[in-house]
Image 1 (cartoon, rainbow, N blue to C red):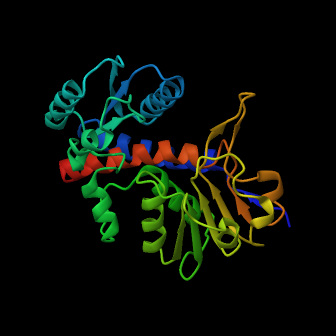
Image 2 (image 1 turned 90 degrees about the vertical axis):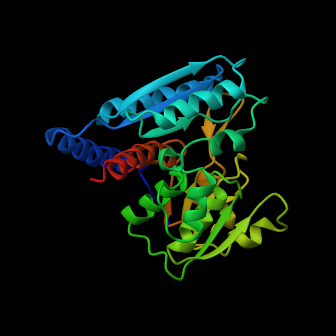
Length: 285
């Protein structure tokens, strides 16, 4: 068996095409252009690249981006003041704060200052709570993007055993909620989990968001499993790899995402989708 590759780039391109068509239709009706405010604090190279890619994606589909590039010395109080202004700006439908923030910021407190209806990253406690109640509004981008990938390749979730490796509030926890809502039986593994391999071997759907290169051994993959690798790890030689031993895993899995080119493009596409959803909800269209 050799796994089929889940082409996140191609699927994300299709999502962006649909978003552009919806925005073009809005503009043709005389409705306003969606707007996304992006805040970058500091000069972290990876964050700078991520923000640039997001701004380019906005331009491609017709979302107006409002870019705020701020020095690492910027204070939390000043950032909260900026967020308050953006909450009140009728041209801004979504607010994105590029994480991680410098160490002197309390990320949770900052995120809670974003109006929930403009929280297009889906990190606000209100939006996570809605997801937990199975009444989602704005959903965390990466987990929602994973659901889109599974839907695209027509992987049934109902009754399947899904194992998530990683329990962060940004990816692992909302991923478990998404898959639970889709009908899976859920196991969440984390840094205190003993005998990780035993759980991975049971997974019909495996989602790894541990951020640890090669932590998931290819031999652990259940034959016929669907493997979603969210981990993005840069090695000393500059190459990027995921959490899963890809070359070994493809011998057992039925489907697998590559790194890069798998989940990453879907995260950006879902951000655009959330921004359009926030716009339509605000305009009641």
